[in-house]
Image (cartoon, rainbow, N blue to C red):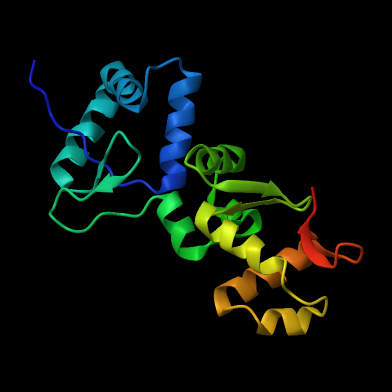
Length: 179
């Protein structure tokens, strides 16, 4: 039997969807699932060979992407979250097949995930800690509070208010997350 390397470029959402299909099919993982598909039909085998010869990005077992042609490494969802500080469900839902799996993956990777009632919000844990510390010292006035925050935090603060995820507690005199 001649073996070939199967190479494919997938978005994080596509990869998560493929993992879900593999799980539903009872496969031990994505590689086993793809082998099953490839061995099942000549058409699937032909596609596998074409993909292997195309030089596209290779999917690593950890879900990261390494470029087979020597380029850079694609960012994972948790890498993007670290850069952004927070990810809102409404922003990513149009690109996802399984929103729950996406946020579960972020949570299992260490992200803080909160359900705002209008959707989920995932936070990088370091950003969340810094953000909640700053919340406690902000004034009640949204405009004044926003001016005291750096730009990224101010945008997230405003979005959280709009989503109903945070409110100002008049008794404790601090901004709090809805639980």
